[in-house]
Amino acid sequence: MKYILIAALLAVASTSAAADKLTQETAEASVTKYLQENVNDPAKLSIVAFGGADLSQCSLWIGPEDYTRDERDQYPDYFKPAKHKGWAIICKYRASNALGAIVLNEQGFILNESGRVVKLVSVHSIKVNAKK
Image (tube, rainbow, N blue to C red; front, top):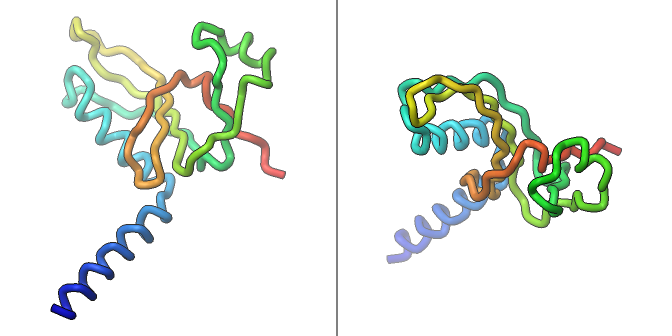
């Protein structure tokens, strides 16, 4: 019984330690998995580029969603620091649309600290803050 309890505690500790070590590579793998599960034809999915940062270095848009990138730059007060830990990733990828045509997409993804995609956002909704 004592060994089962120790094993359970070690499993919980290693899981929480792994959550603290979310890296760019594991965040990219989570986004790739999410896309493979959600695009129309996963066999035709092609990742073009990734860009991302730890959410502690990012601000997220909280203003109206219909603003263009230029309009968003005019209202910097609508960009607020992220309130939770995780990653913001921008992914450019090619995938087939509902008609079967291959189209280029660019999407922002918000991941929690365990690496799970929790929100899709416009690429214009993520701003990486300058390091001080």
